[in-house]
Image 1 (cartoon, rainbow, N blue to C red):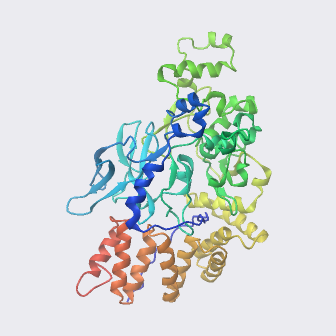
Image 2: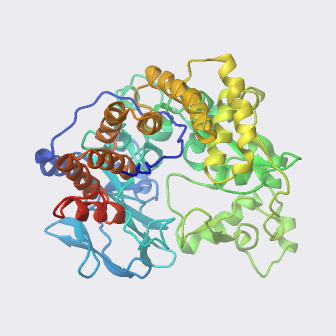
Image 3: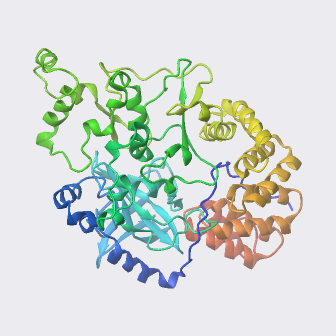
Length: 554
């Protein structure tokens, strides 16, 4: 019998969330989802409203206040045909519940109840659904700029339905408040309800409010914090960087206003030989590149131009932002500078197409004096520097190595030697960092040094049994070495914790099929198709398993 090719996943280099929680059986799901609608609190119900009613009322109309919530709240509906996959999608409201249906003629069809929305709809919106307690992003999004439905970013040319896109903490952190981290050891299984407040609440910027609401202390005012701590409150969601590396044992969702963000996560950006960023990927990074920021220093920050407590009406927008520009540029200057066009942002902060999200425009926060052509691609390996810059982060071998490896995993393969150099340096300082061990193991595995890779993966898992990639990749090594029982043990644990990872389930199905255990192979293949119903390999394998006699191919 020919050996089967097992699926290897690229190293994610991010530790899985570890939090204690309770797993609810599917039979309780409907009840729990109804609870979401009952307990999800709107901004208007904030304890702040008692004393700050006008501010709370104004804030309740902003994009941040409406960044997330129950799917049935102001639902968007529609239908479209996705040509590359030949799938018809429909989003419809039935008896107060929002559903996504998908169908390809005489082929795949099904539906999911949509539980939450992410994105208030001004630029776009996606929805989340749950399967057996695991939370996933909808395969379709609403794109407001073009007023159209389309498949999720990155899948516009896909010929398959992407039903297994995990809803990760990095998404929920910036669009929700009081969300509950994934259940221990899992990637995207959450205790329901996932979050108990709609949108971004007052506390996300002002810190805990209980003591202040009870007259026992002052509330945190970001504008009165030291400049770095003030900026970090905005930075937690408005800075992306080329790599974001969580500190050992820390998570971004642990950050609270007033904390030092760099103790939870470090951001790195690629820069040219002069230290200038090669791109403007997020508002905070782009603003730092502007001449306005460089000359103004800490005086200029997000709050200089943005009022987070209200939405600027369209008829007020030009005069509002012009007044912000004139707070630094004199009225005398404005009287001479293109008096025929009072809209400063139209020329100096034009909207451009997002690199990350299809059909979406973003405002250029570089505040360019004149429109500029995109920078030429680098002819040599760029520098990778922490943002904001700190010598400590620039010389931290662990975070720098993991950041370089994240860059490699995103496609810049010529940076692999640099990633390995920093990772090996990190392992000299600390031989017990599971993320570093797992990354080095993956490098050894790619080179064919299986013994070193096996030892490193084993060490990483002994320190952190939740390292999903390490567990899967070690199982692959064991299977190839003929240690099928050990491989199956590892894969079963990994697939139990992350059934949306189809490759792991397919490895299990093939392992059981190759040893003639067809019932077990069918069970795992069916489980794969539950989460990924349009996966050709799984559908073909199930067809073969259902043949008479069963076979491991269609």
